[in-house]
Image 1: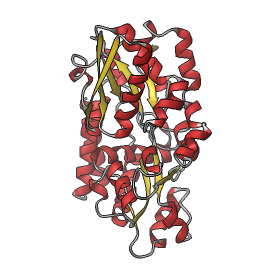
Image 2: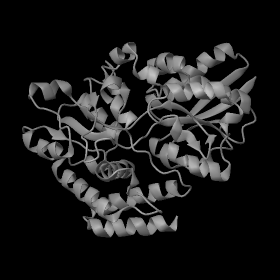
Image 3: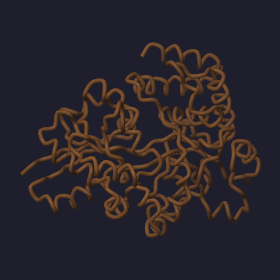
Length: 379
């Protein structure tokens, strides 16, 4: 019996589809047993790969880690284990850049299994009853607060991890993807984004600076006061009947000056540790989990949020998730991709705290940007 250990992240979207696909895989590979452990969402984004590769064969991974993984040889180069035909099939059926983001220097380090970007969530039932129109751009968003009757609010996901994603999104939406150059964020662009965040904090739910997307969506699904959130990572779970008391619907976030850029790309890739004793069978599984048929079927049915275009365009899946896929597909296809250079993840973790702390203390946007770029130079 071949024993494979995997590390997922602690939400039904993060582990249920992996458990289900592992069981399906084992039916055709009875000599293989795959077990999964979970880590928090923050650990998923911040824990160095070096801390995982000795204990796990299969690792769920965020795409900016590719540069570090390549430089240090931490992950299996999957093109040596998955056939060119199979890799090409993954590339052809991937949504947007969900395949490309796991490539680094012509090496392929993870298969795309989960697609995500910042989108808007809303309580359609309440929005319709109030006869409100959702904001389509940032200017309409700023005016939206004044249209809300007493007792209703807008919430933002602005805990440190998520304020970072929102900051990068606003920068990209208003300047384009080139706002980071030579380990420096364009200060003028960054200051403008921080000023916008400060404005929205003043007008949004008082817990916004403490919340992540899951906390907001749990509240929206079970309570009645939060009816809109403009920028958070979408979760199909909440658009499925019965997951929470009320359905939460999703749509594209408000746009900025750059009409061809939506929001920041998230999602999950499935990588194999460079230290695994079973590279062939582990690679076979990560290819299986990302394949179009599996993504469309067992992966999505079991709380998954697939990365396959076929799965996103499936009528069955859109009925299951109340058009989550149809209504946010444009966002994934036009998402901003973060850099891959080896120091990015250290900068990302510390940069998130710098911004969050600065907003909490009402530090000037200029001072926050100076601190941010000074740290960026050091990593």
